[in-house]
Length: 439
Image (cartoon, rainbow, N blue to C red; front, side, top):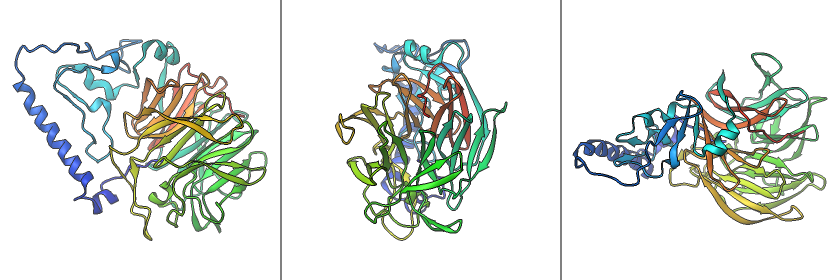
């Protein structure tokens, strides 16, 4: 759960003299100077090794699908990508200034960017499509859970003091969206999955009173047949969890979840963090909770490989804030902070992790939502889009949106519908890349 903030945020209120603000101004000045310097480049000079062209339409003549040749590994001088955009958040690859490649200016306007043609074309198919389906408020939208028996997609809206969730009815054409409440309601589900016909939510909200009850971050389970929700976990030896951000269920029934600090930053919790950010394994049959990883700054997305032998966790420490004080000061972005997807080997008895290794440094913003396709490809929500990686972390394709994506889920009879949601939008992709069928 990573939320962009506007100019009224903590970064602008108390950080105008901070290093981050200085760096932003510095980048703007450097960018301006580079643009002014380009005409002074010696005429007729030749740069060897430049990828030509950097960008070109592929699959069709439309610029909705662009191929990035050789990953644009050698750009023509002068080129420059700002560390941040004008609001202080991550810039885009397409915002890079390229001196003499006219089509590169269209990169941000494409629906799909293809970096690996062979595997990219295979996962896209011959006629991929992107549709912006619903305009929603610019709040975090998270925890998508597709229920195949209903052909409905459940989504949360993370707004302080707000209980209703959303449900998309995919039986309708076009799909419809409506509010939904379980009994009792669950405050701010941030992660979600389905296992053995039950919806498991990572509830991230912590508040003394909402809807007549107290709620704290934890794991909730929903029986769709009765609409009843039950708490499975709400503390670690008396301590509140910080923000159950995302979760996944192992085939043996254990629930693995991340616990960063975002509920405090985003004012979804009325108590500062009591535990350091970490990742845990919870065994519902005994109630035991075991810490499995505590080196990531802000552990966020979490997903198993199809055979459950590898666990992927994203670190979004580039977006963070102060964890002390009586009132949350919000969060801000540092382009030098952690924004990495890590892979871990799962022990044979599925109780601990080994062989931590970074596999992907997000090329935009941070890797928020994280899931694995049926064929083992790893997908992560990174700013205004979703990156599709192979299991080693090589970027194959990027889907681009006009809003910040927090999470996504597959749906449909063949699990080739891909739904994305975030701040201001819910959209759908149709392609050949199948999701894992969760029941």
